[in-house]
Length: 134
Image (cartoon, rainbow, N blue to C red; front, side, top):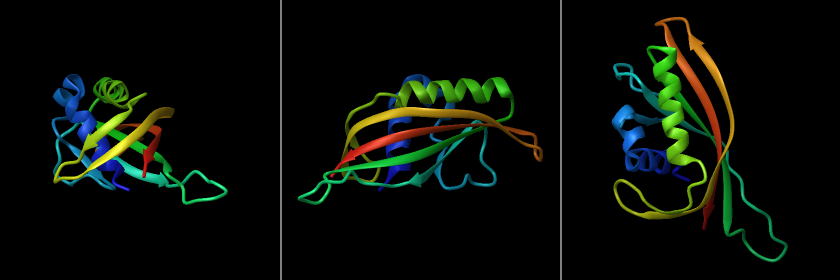
């Protein structure tokens, strides 16, 4: 399940989010030397819907999207732009490197602030449920 690929493509497709993030979307952990703001995407809880008679045709993943920035204002603005790009999206996504996936829907579920004392980096943590057709 390539949730970071989906998030990356949808951010790139949104003019405002893409202007702020400029391709700095990473699965799991950001590169040490990356510029801010940047995004780290983590798959928190993959799951499938259950059916009584057949294999599930819909996976639902809880995805954490962390935005890191050098100021609180910049971090919050980047997070808001990403929410606009992701929330309530449904459709087919062509992944970088090839292949497509069908997103049944993306739902914004939660958000909180964070701070990393060294090297003085602000963090906005958001969670989304991403439903993928199999």
